Length: 323
Image (cartoon, rainbow, N blue to C red):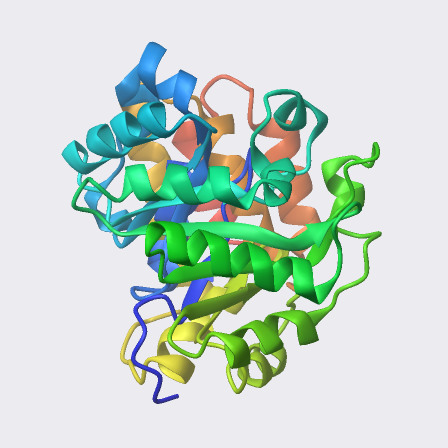
């Protein structure tokens, strides 16, 4: 792959999944893949515990903070704070279809208000850090290619935004759950491809339903980058092949035994710092995907995780079962 793009491959922001622990695991698997936080609202940052939401391990970089909000000044202040924490980028979420987010008038419903989005991104861009937008191809109310093109054009012209990450489904805001919104609206990759044709100077990254290396290669023949979501969490081993295939980097020991060893040692370090094992170990389960005795290992962890003293024996017992 010859594309010169630091976001050639990325892991999507996923609520309840892409916390600092999963990002650490992702970085064990790939030194190059671009990582994202879970979506964090402006209110959580401005009025909550900043370190709780924003502090991260330096090895997670390059890392983007994804924000949810609709107030330009509040978003700008959050970007300023993010710059102090040394994030590499801030991303504005215009794709989340949840009812809670819709009631807050941010996320995917703002696809119907491109001028507001443009003003938000313009204000955010006053801070010296790259700003990107993650959106859908439309909503159930505005779902034509013309509407998507109009959204990209207005936001880009208003704010100067150069990077759009597009989930190739509409956001159905009529009552579907976020899970249903990832499955029911059909994928329309051609919309994203056509946006790249219409806006060749923009950096267009495609997202949605991408499950394997073959699909990634195919998408990269049309757009600038690919963002993986649920597949990367369910089967994180796909991440381990990124550096060699797409970045021409090799020499890293990506054997199951080595990767699982590194992550177990991380879990134990964090346990000594007061982080409960369940917070870190839950991300380990996908690493046993496809293993002959994977179900047995997952069951062993689930049944013993909360037992006193498990931290003393888990590394030896788990690794002895890894083939």
